Image 1 (cartoon, chains in turn orange, brown):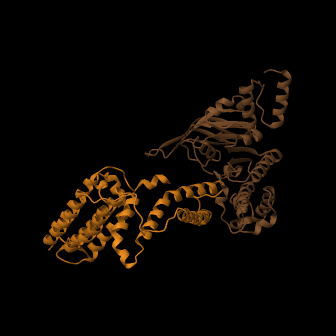
Image 2 (cartoon, each protein chain N blue to C red; image 1 turned 45 degrees about the vertical axis):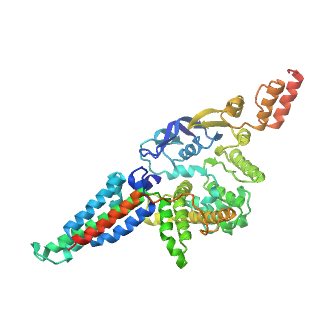
Image 3 (cartoon, rainbow over the protein chains, first blue to last red; image 1 turned 90 degrees about the vertical axis):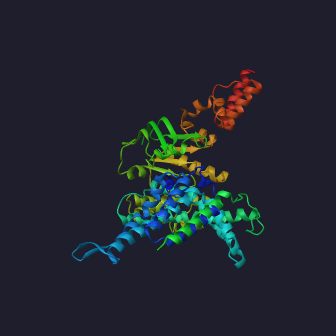
Length: 265
Length: 288
């Protein structure tokens, strides 16, 4: 079970991308998602693609991992492509067979939208592949910092996120343990009719919930007994540092946005 | 029912960067009706080994014979349920597996999975709950309203109700108070004696191993370091101490007498009565 969890997760390395400030990477992803929508012709889309390829080469992530990230939404990409081909009726007719017609506009739109999808997924999975969950949380807390003025519980949200991430492996381990115990009592999780398999989830879920609640309570007690009282005046063990490379990336993203704006039709 | 492991090897997460050899060259045999203790450090492969005993894990090399069934590396095995009915495992902290509304339903869960009718299962539950030293009126309660010790007993009853021929116990008394510990260990020993259930006990406690087991298997770094009767195992206590394992208090005392006063003994003593007799003999011989 743990074998499968390697996919779509952090891949350790010491590439430029890995060493960047998580804040920069988060901003990059967020702004990239906005900038993508500026592109609307062949030139601007190729520019976007070139930028993405550049980011990928900076991260030194094996393409296999990126492909794995794309696999689950492959269906969605194909689906949108087909939708556009069938329903966008603009420009010249390229192909006609009875009632079935493909327009030039439909083909282009379909290609563009699928490309847009692919690029978005690639860039967002680059973030999770090059950044540990804990630094993503740190970066997010810093970026959302200004919202504290409006009484947003930023620190608490970040804490919740890091606790959730911290306990994923623990929960997996626990699941495996309970599955084994129930298998030894005659439950069959992997074969048999669907009805029985759904039923067999109950002896797995109830103990998991019980132990999770117990663990949550213990964690709260442990934190309280060590004097934890939220974000106010709390110093950090992991300091974030904004480097020149981070600024450079932001500048290049800005340049990309300007060029896209000029090139779009 | 006899269980034999023939040249068993087990690797976790084969073909990933996390591959890890947990067991290798394990050749052991547990005869029908015997009481075997498996001892070793954390990480010595005890838990991995015991999961082979009812085919929860399949060896990555070698063979496991469970009664008349053979589990072989690389072969797809079907119908494992009968094996699991015959070999009951009480895992560490078994109370974590309780889930049903009432104690009775929880205990009936195992037997009913193996095709026992509801009426019959309820009879088994009644029998099992008395066996573990609880009263029958606990059957209607929710398992989550019980104390830790009671939950442990209910979970054990859930395995006993399956009426296994072999009972595998993974540190069944961890975290219990001394009295509960003794009661539960004595109960398992009674079951072994009266009903002739083969028992395999994984433990850290040398005292328990010396007291109950017919055979002891010492695991070290994923393989069998030593096997034999308690007498054989504890005749060389230094060897065990070198591994960082414990020996029973009586044996430790003998060792000390030997070192400090030069008293010699013919054999290791595994209980205080025996030790007193041997010391008396040695004094009369006057060999110091």
